Image (tube, rainbow, N blue to C red; front, side, top):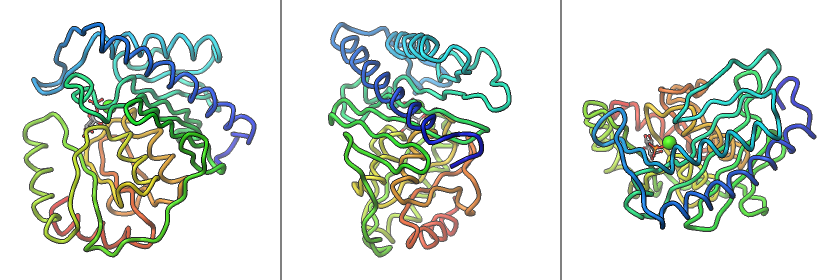
Length: 269
Ligand code: IPD
Ligand code: CA
């Protein structure tokens, strides 16, 4: 457990994240049915909807009611004030997988994590299409719908099913696709499902054997990376160092992680 975060506190933060993530996803679902206004952000491919903004506002309100002194970083509104030393900072993605949400594909989620001293200590990812709530708190393992989830045996490299994703900048996308050209002949297959938060939970669940992406934002990663690592995955940058926003993230079984990282590096990651 990271310094200062007691067992009661991290489980309390996790449980709060679970309740708010579920309610937020219900609101997103209602707004999806009612009709959305769709806009773009960093590029023509980077979508944002009225629901992304409304859901983030509601999550912020709920967190502020429950824990008025915490700081909050969210995808749509950024961060309003710094977290003082020892304080909690919430990192929220109101809708991760906005493209899926807009096109009504499965695999979008609400992701809420609590950080202390720069490290995620609790988090929840709710995936309404599959009716799955993933949650974790440091030192308390990971759960899916309340049941403990734990990685099984590592698949050999040739049988690794790898989830990945692509950013919104055209040049970054080209580089990301080129890495997959090197990787694909050596593994079972790749999947691009469209929500990094769900992809990381899929590693925790054993629904994929690895997840790799470059350039994710903190809100895409914070809760899912904790859930994967509490389920027993190694989650690090491709050189084995800590994951930092905007860098590489590779989540995989600790017994296969090195081989997957080497393959990614050989492929230009
Ligand atoms: C995106 C999703 C996607 C990943 C992108 C993210 P958004 O988040 O997580 O799977 O490949 O890099 O930006 O934009 O839908 O919140
Ligand atoms: Ca996101």
